[in-house]
Image 1 (cartoon, rainbow, N blue to C red):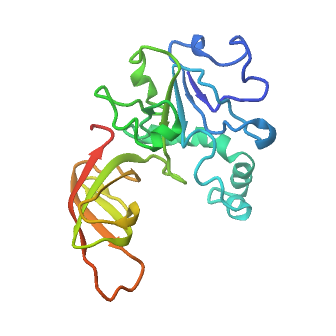
Image 2 (image 1 turned 90 degrees about the vertical axis):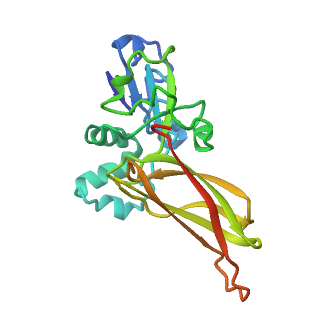
Image 3 (image 1 turned 30 degrees about the vertical axis):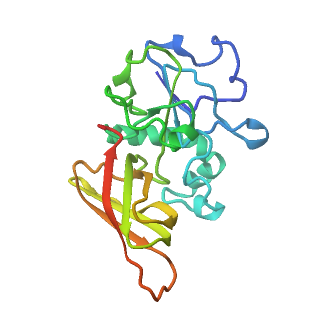
Length: 257
């Protein structure tokens, strides 16, 4: 039984006879996309974990792409009616859109078991354990009975628009060069299944021999990584023409470690 952002008003913190819970089916998975308090933030979805597996994409409160201005959202690609509805309840309705996309992407929407979204964003719950990560949505039941306790909270990020699934990678860059500069480091990944755009790994003082780590939520499942593109920029004209490189770039896939 899959709960798509179960309703908060009149149901949150009520007895289990009233709301969805783990006794309602042999396996209950839940997608939480609109968990801000109803008053004053008009959140429609329930925030507590109530299933065997509870997924909190993007932290479960504010979904990417839902902060578009009113006109761009109402005049939507799917039509004015769909756009108007999304403008009113965009976060809440993301749950069924994620579920719909999950049918098409059996390897997508990996949920990382974590204590909080902040811990997930910081990389504390990366990579997946040896037994793998559950997939949010249609294929969540592949993990039925694989967790020793109920109420498992899982976190992941999604794209701003369809197609929504993203695949998480850890990128560690060790710099090389002759002197420090201020700027940023970008990385793009190339793989057997496709390539990513550029992602900023670090911004600040770029010092040779220093190591920086960042997490990439890529729009494609790379497959086997075949190439890494390293770029840096200091955004200023520097007459000394400083040179900076990468002595190593290590890429780790969250899915298979």
